[in-house]
Length: 132
Image 1 (cartoon, rainbow, N blue to C red):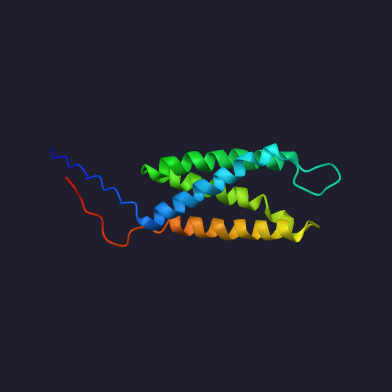
Image 2: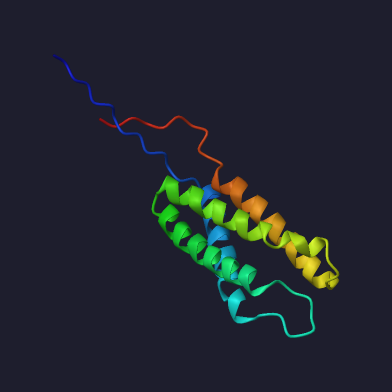
């Protein structure tokens, strides 16, 4: 009876991926304090539930970015999912009457999310070396 062991191949984290991970962490870090600044009475703004979700997703993104920096591919996916969902919670700002500054801020967050996710998943195009 013969057994073969598959060599474990670990892809190297590229500079582009590191930039994407940093952007993910910074975006998550910017979302954490959102629950501390609710909309004043009489002004249009997100409901408290959306602010809480944004803060929790920001915390998840920061933790995932730290773990992804250390090489976890699962954390890379979780971080990307967290910032995508956090960005989706801001999209209703385009459809309600809010100041143009808020719409520009949401547009910037959409752009930042797209750039971060693309960079996070831009893998190394060179073949990985197999170490026995």
